[in-house]
Image (cartoon, rainbow, N blue to C red):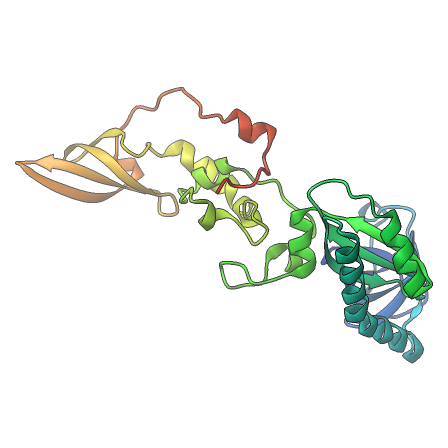
Length: 289
């Protein structure tokens, strides 16, 4: 079985397998690894161990070496150059009048290239900008356009729940989300309440959707007529975690509200299935404001 180590790169939370070879690597240790972009610096998140061949994607690229003091100093120097590089790039963008927003930059491990990340409404002709930047930095220049969700992942921030946004902290890949998920969970469809910092639907809507989608099929609709041990009533709310419904019952000229277990409520379910064609075609469409 191959000896592997799990690492993460600085920009993102997705883990990657690399061949550890003869090295015994520990959590938090810096390593230099070989990637499609050349040599890069990464941090070990799981110590080296043996795994089954079926659990890895071949070919498995190797760890070149544990990071040395010189490597750590190079990474720190590249990081220190970022703020000034971003400032210069923003000035050049304004001078050229380009409709783009610079959000980040990254120097490669060997310092031979700098990658600027930006967002824009559409395609941008930045060839003159590349020449301007090359004349300042005297290294290879790359500009990479990303979407609004990637911008939130790169910049990070605090989500409405008070925690770091999932895409920057704990979610390796973006999940497909739709308005139907919010409906299944009985959430308000107010865009401000179900949208993340990026303005798109919150990724966390998908976390428990499987349970809510299943529970929703078993519950009566809000406003449905039902029978209860105390007589006929109307459903005013549903608690899908407790599998209870709140029923409004008219009895002797008075209105009674009862929280009843689902098994104590009788109702007839129609065979009409809700479907939103727009959601099916555009599951990640941003909420309208």
